[in-house]
Length: 227
Image 1 (cartoon, rainbow, N blue to C red):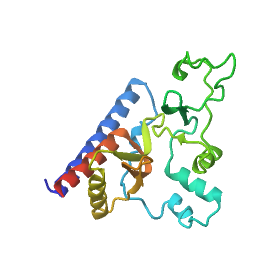
Image 2 (image 1 turned 90 degrees about the horizontal axis):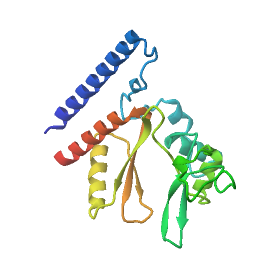
Image 3 (image 1 turned 90 degrees about the vertical axis):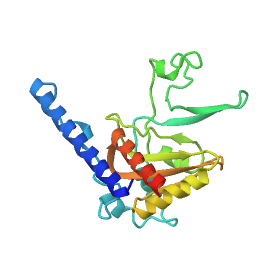
Image 4 (image 1 turned 30 degrees about the vertical axis):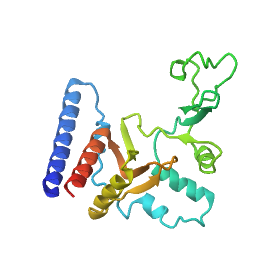
C-alpha cells in the first residue's frame, strides 16, 4: 500500500474520531451530564514539532555547558507525566528481584505501612511523593532510579516509547529511524541499560490520547513494512 493511501486513511480516522467526540459531547450536554468538553479534543495536530512553540524556544540554547537547573527543566519538558506521584526502583538482592513501586512518604513507617503483607495499591495510608526537580536531579545524577507515570488522569500522554528487544532489534530500530527521517518525524533513540535492545522516543507538542498514539504506531510500522 502506498504511504499516501495510509496517510489518507489516518486523516480520515482522525476526522471520524473528532466527529464522534463532538457528537458525544453534544449528547452529554442535552442530557445534562456535563458542560465541559471532552479531554480527548486535545488531539495533536501534527507529530512534527512547531519550531516557534514556547518550549522549543526557551530550551533551544541548552547544551552540555548549561547549568543543572536548565538541564533538569529541559528533561522535564520532554518527559512529562503525572506530577503527583512517581515510581522508584527497588532491589531484593537475596531473592535476585527488582521492580518499581510508587514512592510513598509513609513507607516502612510503623503503624502506617503494612508492607510486605499489604500491597501499596491496597494500603489506606498512601501518601505518594510528588515528582519535582529534586527527584529528577537525583535520578539524573544516579542517586535513585525514578520512573514516570506517563498516562495522565484524563488518559492522555505527552510522549510515546517503542521498546525493541528481539534478536534483530538493531535492524528494526534502523528501519524505523529511516522511515522517520524520510517523513520528517522527530525521534530519539536510546540504548537499553542491558545493552541488548533500544528505545525509540516520540515527544508530542500537545498531550495525545491513547487512540491517537495507536494510530501513529500503525502508520509508522505500515510505512516500515512498505519501505
